[in-house]
Image (tube, rainbow, N blue to C red; front, side):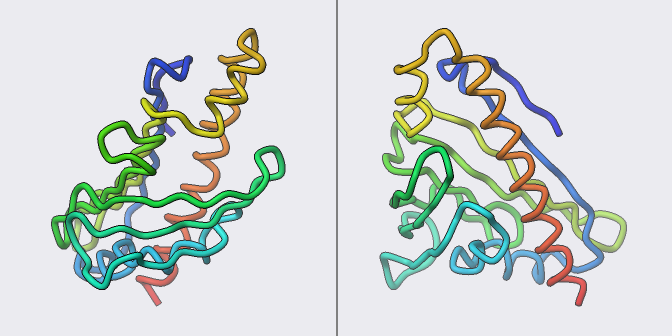
Amino acid sequence: MEWTGARYADLPTVEVRTWIDASPQRVWELVSDAELMPDTSTELCSVEWADDKRGLGARFVGHNEHESFGTWSTTSHVVEYEPGRVFAWAVSDPDQPAALWRFRLQPRDGGTELSQWVRMGPGKSGLSYAIERMPDKEQKIVFVRLREFERNMTATLEHVKRLAEA
């Protein structure tokens, strides 16, 4: 895991990577299908596309559940879409997202190196409200959330790997 930043205003990030014995096109089919992602997550319960189109500017709605934050839904906006290379989405407001998520694919050694990256903020999120209630615990709150992201992202990449290599 790589992670940076200790406070929410620092726009902390985390990234995980794996190598997959499958073509970038096969991996792309999986990571660009937002409706498949709930199968890989303990937090994301369901997703549906809000638009008929796919690609840059498309929107999808994610329904989430977390023991500390409860249940919530967000609309995400596809902000990067390069088939076979990059799929990224901004949560809530594309100009001031609560989080920015990205899959990046690169051909390597006859397969695909897949990374998943997330940046918190700069827009408000459930985490922002927790920090406002307990400002003295901000660094711990951010660290714990980054670790949760890391665990979920690692599980996501493992799931994508299994599907792509099957």
